[in-house]
Length: 474
Image 1 (cartoon, rainbow, N blue to C red):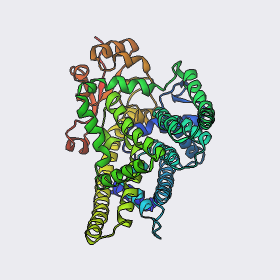
Image 2 (cartoon, rainbow, N blue to C red; image 1 turned 30 degrees about the vertical axis):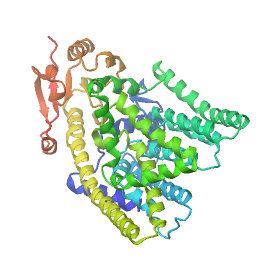
Image 3 (cartoon, rainbow, N blue to C red; image 1 turned 45 degrees about the vertical axis):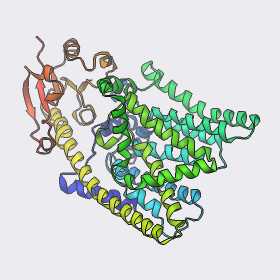
Image 4 (tube, rainbow, N blue to C red; image 1 turned 90 degrees about the horizontal axis):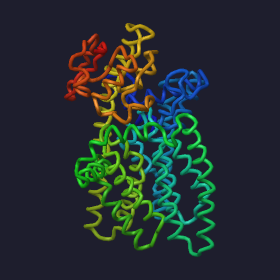
């Protein structure tokens, strides 16, 4: 089913404009993967090692596609399909464990996961999002089971950090479960030691990897993203929390919310500490992003890794309610709940396919088009500054100055200061600037445009087309 679901999104994308990825960041991973596979170096720009990839494990998996000559599209889409299938199997298994009387012949929970539009979008995005979601879900589901292998849980948490730095937050529910669920001091200490042994090895390697590349313990994106979007922290905290909390509810999540509440009540009654600490993590994860990185664009992709486990809780609660129905009104209510869940799921799956196609069209007709133009029309030795480095790095073949700070971390201290950026670009000897005009109105005001994409897709979203400017150094 995951093949059909992701395939349908790719089919719509192909006929809407063409195949591609819905994020420019996808091309960042592809560039690191290609350089690793073909040049044997961890670098975005050839010969310049850097840690601009937030997800080293994902970039390494993509590199396999270049060795197999299936990159950048076939291998990446295949990875998305396989990971979505694994997530679906995990969800079905988890619901059956949480609700022992749930034993249908048809894997309803798994099928729902393969049709949930956020997850299908992520499967075709070329990003690490779904891989991280799978690791997060696996850790939290294993914590909810009575028999826990804390060494393996530590390994999984350590591995998750190689996909996203926020994987370290999974230590919270793991430690809390040990303190609450283990019955003696001896058992708690043994569990903590096993957890640390599993986690610390991969964590130490992760820190060493970043320190060798940049001298900093975290990837450049960890610092750059927070600096770039620091202005959003001026939004009232309650509003930021609400914006993050609503993301999993856009779609079938709203129908599964009552089920998640039923699961929470059941867990409290049973003192299922592993399940409750996972729920606390979910709330804390959303709160952390609301506090430090309150961005909800691209369908809430930063919070997407927390969505699958929320859907699992909702499905478990739905199963509890449906299978414990004893009166006619409960039967009517459960039937309505099941039908409305299925209807919402299918409607948003369809709308998600259109959203995916539109996102791909914007990236392909703007960033990818500009990158090909730069490759064909600018001098090979021209230094180009741009905010979106993904497609530019993959297709243009030019030296780049990264205004987002991912591979040019020295811009982070003044990343939103246009006067500081102007001075920096002059010092670097930049010759061309590639950007959307409204992103840097002061920088672009007096510059001479030499190319504009003319894409019909971006203006329909209320945005301007991307422009290549000749940089002027007064």
